[in-house]
Image 1 (tube, rainbow, N blue to C red):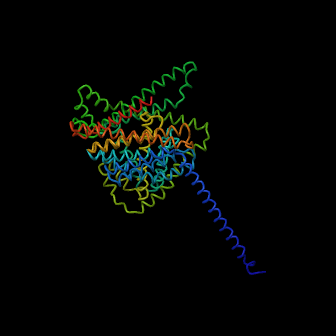
Image 2: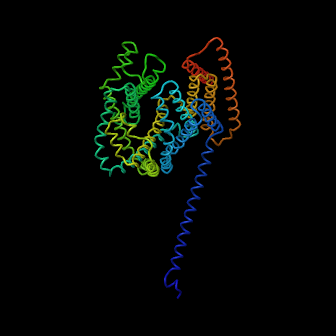
Image 3: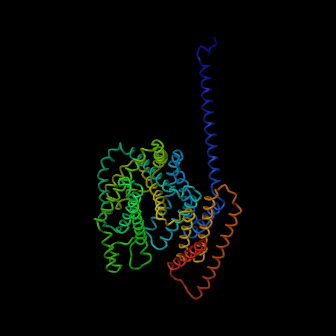
Length: 556
């Protein structure tokens, strides 16, 4: 009998070696499977866009970087374009129906939201604190972000089928996961628990004053926002709830007609509210009657004719009407939630729950890593000093009691909110049918490039603005053709030659239009001088709209 057989060391060594080899083989097989799946996914993603899609995306990025460098600098333009592309990537992941893919989107949406929030928050700060060129810079940054986002999602087959809405919902769910991490971390802190109730009461009081009482300068915007939210949710409830079950079969036709009329009214009311928001924010830039941004009810009363101004100021500050809108929104949301739960019981509950929980788990998991990394660094910004005066003192005291980890995670909630707001904005624009039913990405990218052209005109660069506006038209034409090819023939069809011919024709047409417009502009400038940047912007925008209308009419 050998010593190894007596002590058992030989057998143990063999088992350890076998275990190590098995773990190594499992790791190799897992890595090989992941690499193969990733390669297949990459090839599928590369095979999805057509040649026109690739050209449209490349031209959008090139125009964005070039014009953005003129208006806001190369670094900020590149950051904005990168943020838009990152938002497009996570939107496509979160818009998937597969729980694993949505979970991956929940993991990636947190760092992407940090990247996205940098130019987005800068643009918001410029709008609120600056005037003139600051507002132009903010619009430029937002246009760059939207253009890159639209170019990234243009070839996506779910774009016109609720894809962006699913992406916005996934971002909201990931934010809820981060909120859960913050709640679990601060729950054991006695100082946080003691100050939470007072902070919640103060925040609800401030929210009530802002939403119901309307005592601040944002009264017009808050009223329009309430009307917009109530109209959108009511329209959604009218379409989603099964009202036909509560009436006899012979009256369902009249009920459907009545619901259709109500939804039409909601659509018109929501559009009026959106226009009111735009006017309230932009009125001070185009009229000397209004000095503040946004317009206050007092300025409405003095700046508009007596019956209109007084009536509009009374309407936007009516507390009773605001309370009715809040109650209507809450009731519609409750009914939607109940109906969604009823329908959930008739479906695969496990699969639906997996789709919902995947972004939550992904966002919470990556938050544990990101927040831990951020909390280990010294915060150079005094958050308490920055928030003092802007929020109630109890909120400042509550934030001061947060641990560093929870504070870093709370910052991630803010960045996710910024990203989700952009996605919900695109969803609302699509809901209003401002974008066409086809070639949504191309239309959105072309619109963003058109905003860049207006920015150039305001900055006094009229000829580059004309070229950029023509480029927006070319992008729209190429993107629309790509959408038609992808929809009717499929991305795998042999259409390269036809696409190249169409691209060449579109570019040639755009070049002729641009050269002719620049020539007319130089000839007209001998007799007429445009000294106001706003007039130049209106001229460029009107010319672009005229070109689009002519082409649309020629297409029949």
